[in-house]
Length: 322
Image (cartoon, rainbow, N blue to C red):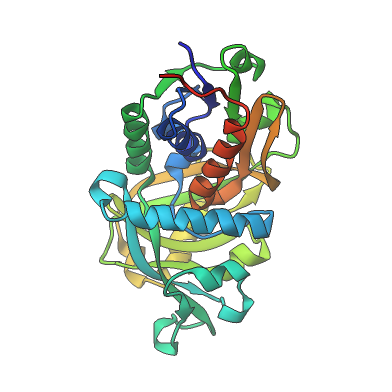
């Protein structure tokens, strides 16, 4: 096929990386064992916020770059799946946030009337909320418009890709555990419940669970297809079968913030495995550029990581002539 680079993986990290590379003039092929809409990325909520991702300083920069890109895409929500939505992070205080927060437009302390009962502090912001199936379709269409291709192919090793192109970008997420192999990669199970939206217009996140590393977290995300309720964050759990008891617990927690949720009709149950690592791996190793280990912050850092990966690729890949 004459590829300059093969991207392995078609989740949000893989497709975003492929789009950036193709739009910079490289001949890009994406190899994936499953369609983009069947990847873990498609299950995500998905609100922009640097959630449990390290290294903190670099991740903050990747996230801010992604925020700029996503805000631009939000001008065409029907096409891109990205909307700018107001919401509250309960349990956070401005002075407790990392330096990146100072550069988020409009991020401010929530007033007492803006915080549900039971929470002493909170912050308010208008942030990108992404309909992931729609966004993944947008990225795939954009890749095709730039001349990139998607091939369904299951790999047993990265060597199969390095034999087909001068440079490979490894965006295999949880698959990197076996393909690299990298034993530091592990799943963090997340279960969600999608219900009919009883009129909720804003997103809501209880920050305490995420900050303290609890297995149970609380978030409410209004999406075009329904209200997404969450959730769980269970490290090293591989099971992708929804638990009815967990679903009821999720609904009960979210009902404390929005009582109408308790009576809403359930539309779907979802379980995804976040591809976590102690730190994101974003570096070149021979002719392979690794870009994986984003955990639950994949969409949040996708564009920043993709642009950094592209810089590493351009140092290795020949330019197309003519």
